[in-house]
Image (cartoon, rainbow, N blue to C red; front, side):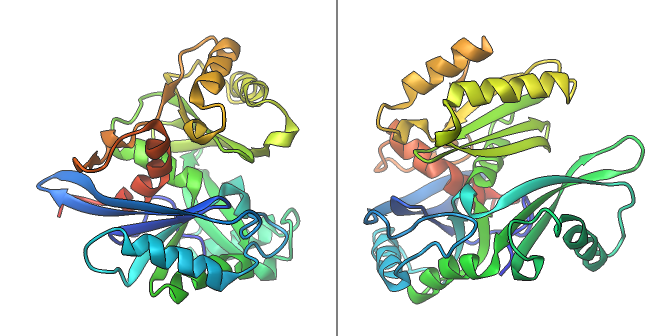
Length: 316
């Protein structure tokens, strides 16, 4: 199963996230033109059960993860879904921005060209890869850049199999940060150039977006340095190499679930960037029912789920 294309193909009404610490799920409904998260649930996972990464299988016990998904879905309320969208950690895939001078008209030809271009730098044999190709920035000369995500097919299959064993087919598989970005775009999307900082307890992902076009994407393990330092390096790259004129907004997601909370990370970013940093609030894209409390931790957990649920969706 290939990773789903960013911002294409309508999603089911339930999204599931599998991370190394937990399984989470959310259900989407509509009140007229207003998207609403009608249900949310999560289940913790034992340490070491899921170890997201590129090179090895990620799930040590697929049936155990399936049981956690089953318990999570049973808490959502409503009819048990037979189809879900699936959010996986960014570290499951390698994301590359690939420029192409000549873009073929047929999608199959585009896939073939992309696979040929990335085979030398892929972290595993391209024959073992699931490859997602999505439109990126377009050049004035007629060329185009594509957002390419590569993951091992057998790794993606593990995540899909856990859902299938829970009775739900995962027809769409998306990286967590892509879900967060889509949620921002579905709500009060920034204008101009904006920076997303998605931080977890194991990795940091930074993305620079111009309107709806991705200019930059980088994922780093937290062992590589302090988040503020890595974000500062990205800002310098944006100014020097991408000829940026400044971010209209800097948005942060995920930090509320860190042991120290979001405030310390946010202040560190503001000190290095000399700019205000705002936490992403998925309620700008989808309201919550009255019975769902809106703690910062919950909003961070919902952000990628809401984005995947609303990807290319319109009011029912």
